[in-house]
Image: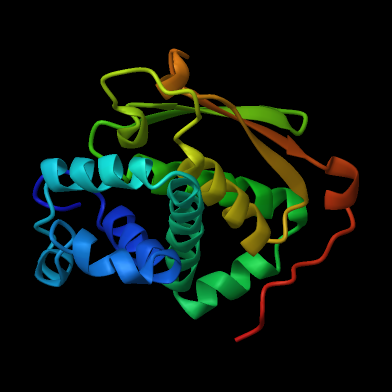
Length: 202
């Protein structure tokens, strides 16, 4: 976490998403996401909210960047694991890899901001991630679009990285008037019995 309770992975992944998809605007956004702030973990809540506000004004790039950032958050989390840990997970049955993926996704999403909470429900391959306190959806007026694609992309990427067959769908968003951001999960239990891990070997 940064000094203001903002997750470093969130800040770094947003910065990288902007660099990838809006490179000509990166210098503008670095007025708030400064390289020094990224290195030292001093990006506060106000600068991050400013970045998200300006990104929303970009239109479709907002959704592309926040989803890309969610994918980076998952990828960097897996890459930070010890090689022996990744190898151990790779050898697990698919249903166990699913549990690992969901647990890490929950931890990563909770780590985006000190005020974010996640309530997870899963039964017979169907479940939800109920995200409360989303920074992406903390806006004054309601939005006509769902704004928390970061979370759905994070969860989907974790499932993909652990070769867990399933689908993720952003069902509700607080920004459009829902009480919280709700991500629906549907795991393919039949494929999970036979699928083998596609994670690259060390």
